[in-house]
Length: 163
Image 1 (cartoon, rainbow, N blue to C red):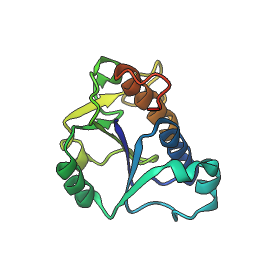
Image 2: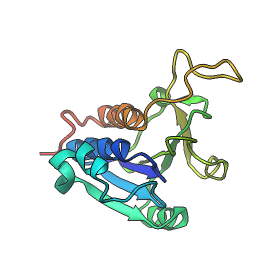
Image 3: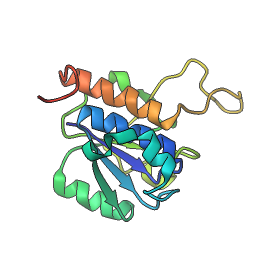
C-alpha cells in the first residue's frame, strides 16, 4: 500500500483532510517535522473528524530521520512537485511507494529535488509559468487525493480498503 508523506506541513486543516483520506484508504501517513502547528490543534482534529483512530500516523523528527526510516523499509520515494515535468498519470506506481508532498507555501526545497527516485507533477490547464500568473499549485489535500487514488487504482484496490 503506498504511503503518504507530508514534508513540514503548515496548515492544520490540510493535514487533517489528508489524515481522513489515509484513514479511508488504509494508507500510512508520515509527517516530517517541524510542523507548522501542534498535533493537538483543534483545526487539525476537526478536519480529521472522528477518524483519527484509523490513521496509521508516523512522525519523523526531521528529513534525515524520515530518510533513514524509509531506507530500512524499502520502496521508492516519489515526489510530487510543480517543478517536475513527468505527469503522475504516466507513472506506474508500486505497492511500496512513498508519495512525498511539500509544504503548502513553497513545496519541496531544492535540496529535496534530487533525493527522490521519481519526480511527478499534476498537470493543470492554467499552470503558472515564468511570470504568466497562472495557478501555482493545487490544495495539498486535493493533490494527495488525486495521486493516492491513481496509485490505488493502478494497484487494483477497488474500494480502497482491504477487507
